[in-house]
Length: 179
Image (cartoon, rainbow, N blue to C red; front, side, top):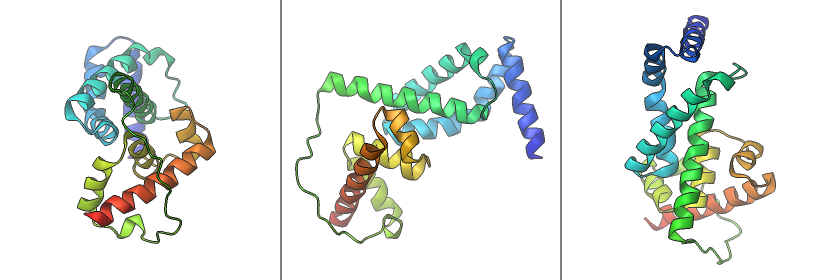
């Protein structure tokens, strides 16, 4: 079954590369919901996620000739959506100026585990995190990227990714505990 799905997706990609609009629409239909969820987790604003999603599909179809099946189409598209989302946030941040200024020392030992917290409180807590912290938490815990990959995506070092994740997790726990 899985090989059939892979073949079908590969055939749709090949047909899309050849300019088949119907195949492009089918690929869009297969991936739009999952990619919207990826954009929403990073951007949190529906309209922004919808814009980034459309831009991502346009970019993917324009660059489809560069797709070499070294990964799945979904993984390749997800990378485009994440990069577009991050670029959107960077642009927004430049326009609004820097709103986050975390200068307070962090407590050294906070033993509450994230998986023990109620899901609704975590969602509220995530929405209250500063943008950079929310990105790291989303990429690491929700999207499943490791710190090396996060460093590449965000243009930061692996150690910066790890320390930002640690700080983000502590901040999230602090917010959730205050709810």
